[in-house]
Length: 306
Image (cartoon, one colour):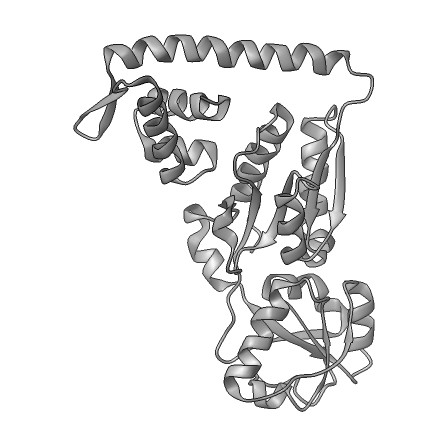
């Protein structure tokens, strides 16, 4: 029996639904189902029966719910008591890709600090691939990442532009960025054949975007002419403005650079993106971490990335 299992069970009991519990906990439905099943196996009892679409506690389930609620409340109070005694509280460690940290994250961080000034944050810039690895080895608590990577199901995750912003999410994509004076600047879309003839600036190797672009070039039979790699967006933009280089950003970013003499051209066919937040499976979610997860999801409902 673990605290997470009890927390999943109590949430499902309160919501009368595994689906609603999973949404509230930011985990998958199978995660909640397995936790409940493991408790039933460990104690040799049935915890729920179904009445229509609702989960109803059995008599044994009701007894466990009352005791589990007490245990979880006690643990919360214990954590709060000893956290308040600590002279230096551990900060929340957050990983963020350079593109998001430059454009979208500062507003979120300011709003979060305004609401929770007592929560210290350490912000680390990493590409999505490395950020996920650092979450897995507990160097980071959570990370905002490009979700289009093969191993994303190894983590608990939540899409920041989810079903509430599905139409908006579908519109964001990778765009080819060039100077307004570049020979391709007037094109409505650009192909890998055309981009393969240009000197390109890619992000560092730990970027999911790089993997997506390389795969696209390989599938189309072309080799990108990568002359430089960087994680510094300001530097990339300054180089692009010389009219000698092309690079890649998200379409949702181009409006922010419209006055910089930079144009973003959609790829043909497009490469869509999906941004989300990840954290380690089985990790105990502290009160500060839960506040950040809740705040981030609500913030991007009201201020979508796209």
